[in-house]
Length: 238
Image (tube, one colour):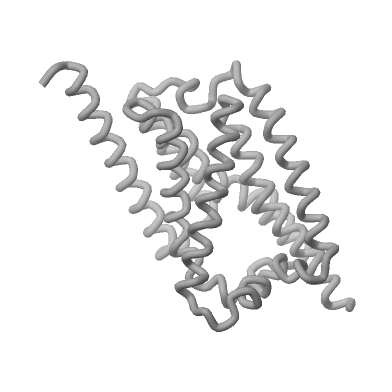
């Protein structure tokens, strides 16, 4: 085996190992339900391993020279998501999509969820896992479009376990699927989040910074909690 072939084989083995580790982390989190800070530490651990493996900050989407571009793309995406959510909240037909019982919270708890738990306990882990570490590892032996598609598909599959009770917790989802069953909810969630992964990945690719995908991911999740807070109160007032 030539030296280049050996390097490619090792890169593929490392990529497979990262996928297995991510799956193990995810299953453990879903079974044990650790506090948010444990998930933040998991993300930090992945990043530390990536640096030990020899990946540079630039390869990981964390290079200083791309932070400005990442911030610009990220803030633009936050504005777009906020605008879409405003329209969705104002339309009676789409308002139930914001009414998730997990987020029917007091104001202080909703703010903590949106500003602490989600960015540090969800977004940081998932973005470091998929758009930073796994992205950089795959890029050593895949073309960029292949990296984008692979990370997006795996990101969709990552959401299988969290979606198992989504039909029971979200009014919009339960109303949309009716009696179609959990399998439909899971399949739709995987497809939707895979598309979301494509968007997040493209933001990362265009900006060269994972900061852009972090901002978009945070906006999608955290603004959903805050708009959900308003949706539940409008529902009770009406």
